Image (tube, rainbow, N blue to C red; front, side):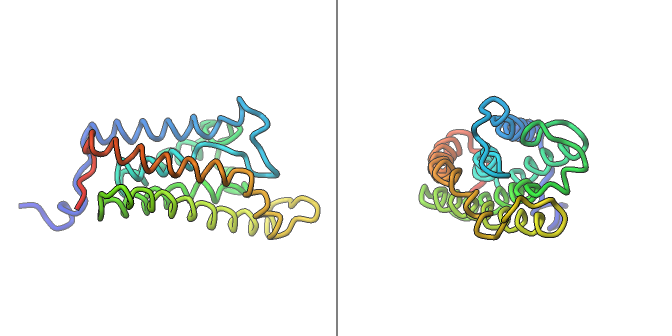
Length: 198
């Protein structure tokens, strides 16, 4: 007889592990788009596709597996693999001002997944994608500002306003990708049926 804990947190199946691995890999690819397109960096913030893939992971895999995919990606990078932006990696990345964005990928995936688990409408997918993007910006930007003020070497005349100005260039891209993620995930979920929806 299964316990309540086992029912609320079922064991991962091989197919789940495969999907988690796929999204972790997509995060690695999305992180290093800047290495192939050098102009996609503004101030101290590289413009990447990580937010898109993190949100997509949550929308398609659900809160638990989506967050786990982003956590696996983070752990691989901290272990030393060059999978972060600009092929960065290693435990020292914890001190990077932009490491807060990596942490928010986990939170964004979890929140996006949680929202669509409760409602499988197209509207809920779009709303979840936008809220997850907002979480990424709010937490990541504030983390970056605090990091530059407390332990990182801040650029000259760095301010809270400047930190947010750095976030303006990638914003249109992330809004468009949030819309695309919502539409794509909604259609894929109906086909793949990876995640049970209430």
